[in-house]
Length: 478
Ligand SMILES: Cc1cc2nc3c(=O)[nH]c(=O)nc-3n(C[C@H](O)[C@H](O)[C@H](O)COP(=O)(O)OP(=O)(O)OC[C@H]3O[C@@H](n4cnc5c(N)ncnc54)[C@H](O)[C@@H]3O)c2cc1C
Image (cartoon, rainbow, N blue to C red):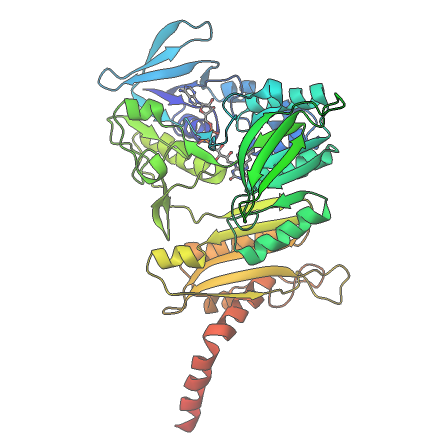
């Protein structure tokens, strides 16, 4: 049995590791377009900020660790085509030559590519000009080279999603004055605007100049002013909510507005696509092409509440890759589905979400209601208690928990508290039943009713208390 995986990141490596673990006699080859297998691209902002001292530290495992599991690595090797009928992968080797690799089973984890928004000048400018996109280790080295070379004093980040926010923090940590431009009404658009506003206040507190409802329309090299001195290397133009023209002179531009699935290899081989153009797979991660499986950012994501969607996340890629690796060996693993659980640290604040927001819940037929409360992370009498802003969404017809969003200071265990909601969602609990969970308590770390339970109780008070009171009255009258 020869299993070949294409892609050396979360999905491809997870598939290869699972296969070697299940059957140490399986021959496993991993084909990777670059020289950085099993690097944590999620850690890139912390290398740019300087918190991670060396780029090699971003490796989940070194190449030697991977090879010690018995897998073979083909680095700097690009898979150009799949000959499905012939069970053969066509390759462009590091020296530019062509070769091929026979397989019995193939797992494709080609991941995603950064989106290039329609900004005039973006395609003509690049790293040499101080204009960057950020997804791979190669992109990271290009960015850090620019930072070392031009020592920018000012930067403009296009996009205020989680990567844009992490990079605003990273560049600020390097002493660069950051302007952040977001087309949508609030930063971190993956949470409700009430919580996004808290993240924005944190950016303000760290002197990041935020422009929301603002679209960047053009980037060009700045011309010199009348005195002959440059005001900034790049001139960025945009329009604000009133369609008023805006202009910024900056040294560096970083465009981070999301990703799209990298599907060329599979689509050319005949695979079907689904949500957002990602490759369609079933819950076993089969593509429909014989002996070809796929996982990670290149495929659609089964969401336990929304159905099939596209949700490119490292957590998902790891799980899907593991399922694909097992099934490629003849297993019967199933991907249980995502809840879109995610978390981001922005300076001293943590923002997290799981499940659905109201507008998403409506699309799949729920009648959602949301309550917001701010319980303390631990007992107020013990020093250092801080509120966590929590929005709980539940179904008004059934009382079922649909989602939760949290923003709290770093140190309030916000990331782990969102996970309590994620577990409750996974098991289809009602909001009310969350009060029954036996959660831990000691005054410096929590409360007898944990913050997640207090927020659930706030939802019950907002939406179910009148019915509970009426039910009690009817019992007492009888
Ligand atoms: C800055 C940043 C921060 C992030 N932070 C988080 C986070 O905090 N939490 C989280 O859950 N997710 C995060 N993500 C997202 C997460 O990194 C991705 O969802 C995850 O890496 C997807 O893994 P993947 O294996 O599907 O694809 P990718 O990581 O995109 O890897 C694709 C792999 O395929 C290779 N490849 C592509 N085409 C070919 C080809 N034709 N031949 C050979 N090899 C090929 C590439 O070289 C690469 O090895 C972050 C992403 C970025 C960029």
